[in-house]
Image 1 (cartoon, helix red, strand yellow):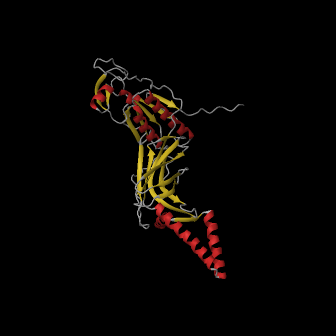
Image 2 (cartoon, one colour):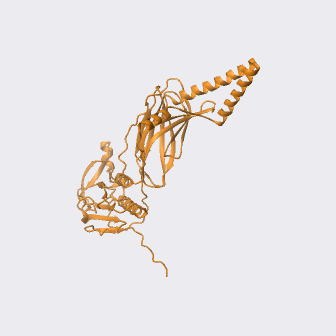
Image 3 (tube, helix red, strand yellow):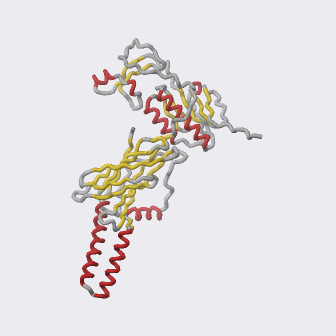
Length: 391
């Protein structure tokens, strides 16, 4: 599984913006893409002030503070030196608590690692690498949370000059692209009297792919081939994808079962078999995005994703067209991930069925509407017929 990383770092100047995003977010195109609302000057100023530091009393801290006030009141009225000594110790503990919590949250660099994509209703693994850039002080009991992710991560101890990795997980029930904008660092170290928080600008996105377990028709996707395990030969018999042509270096998205292991071991780099494509022209899978959004449209999209998954499992070369998104012909898991990533970003209600570059004679149209599918080799309709009411 591929991972995307975003880095952030902290400085000592609380008035500056010490956290920088390491990657941008592609334009929001999915129906359920979460994007930050436009902000005015006052909103940006308030977010910056709020993100600087926030301090809240814990229950123990509130009782401790009330106790300090009570001791101070009694000491002032009685003049008892022992009570003044106790009050000084309590106030000193509060000052030390604030200083240590401040040092705990400072000097940290956060790297967020997200998978390239995850199927809907599956847990999204989120990894955080917390690097303590301080020279002498250890950071203790740091909690990491994000708006948009239900779970939190907790790192118990990060010695100076080291990196600790912690994990969190979140589940999403609808496909789409979910933007992440703010990471919150919090700690109650050392005495749990106060909870100190700091917001971190860390931009990223979680891509949720549609489900791929829908039942789909054959629709011409069954013409796969099994990669031969024997050493290739120019006289190799032609399969559904054609005769063996040559060997070439492995590229991202190629089927790992096409790797020629003997040559790869000799050259110390992966090399795959390449076949003539005359006998295995890719099939185009086209999603009709002109239908209005809704459950029927989502069912059509999931059928499209399932057809792509089936073609990839059979190692049948396929291409995808879904509105403004087009994925060129290819095979393997990398091709499937590219197709699912495009489908996660699809927005329905867009005019047009397919780009002019799509060869309709070799294309399958998937629709939940009433499109005639003129020129397409096959039309897959996913709308559930309405049952007549019993008289």
